[in-house]
Structures are given as C-alpha cells and as structure tokens.
Image 1: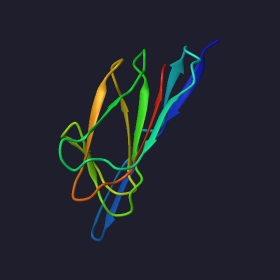
Image 2 (image 1 turned 90 degrees about the horizontal axis):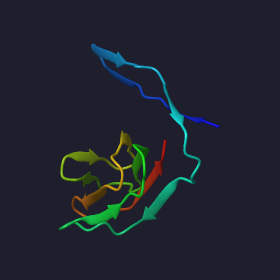
Image 3 (image 1 turned 180 degrees about the vertical axis):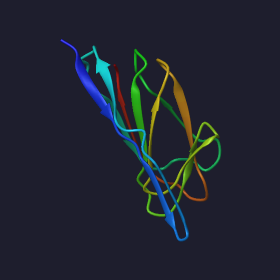
Image 4 (image 1 turned 30 degrees about the vertical axis):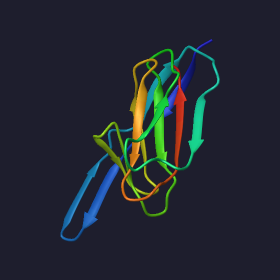
Length: 116
C-alpha cells in the first residue's frame, strides 16, 4: 500500500516598503517504500575538510538537513548555506555522501531522509 510524504514551502519577505511572497503550495509525493526513515543527529562538524555523511536512501528520497546551532552556519557540499536554526528540504540521488563544513566554529546538525 502506498503512503504519502507531504512537503510544504513558502517564502514571505516584509521589509517596508518592500514586500514579496512566494507560496508554491504543498507537494504530495507517493511513498511506495515502507522502510523506516534514516536520521543522523550529530555535533562537532569540522571547520576544515568537513564531515562526510552517507545518506542511505535507495530511491529518490526526500531529505531534510537542519542546523541545530544557535549562532554558526555550515555549508553542504560547498554550495548550500544553512544558517543557525535553519533547515532545508531537498531530493537526493540514492547512496549520496554529503560533506558538511562548519563556518567559524563547530556546530550540530540533524539529517532525516525518507525513501519514496
């Protein structure tokens, strides 16, 4: 029996006199695989060389990467910046390894991946 993964996303900027909003609504993804989600919770991301995390999705799964630090940001594979407290939703190809590198001081992260 197929299940559903629901992902919602919106952006609202309000800085008088400029305002803007983008709300592409929620996306529902059919989830045919019933395996438990992968989750990695860690602290101590390196500031040089990064910390490699292999994400064991076997299908094109949905992944959330969250920065659990209060002040520092990190980058993912050198191009995605995740500031303190932020999270980012993305699709990854099966078996990918991401490298997370902290900016100025070590910080923590949560990665949660769902097969679909």
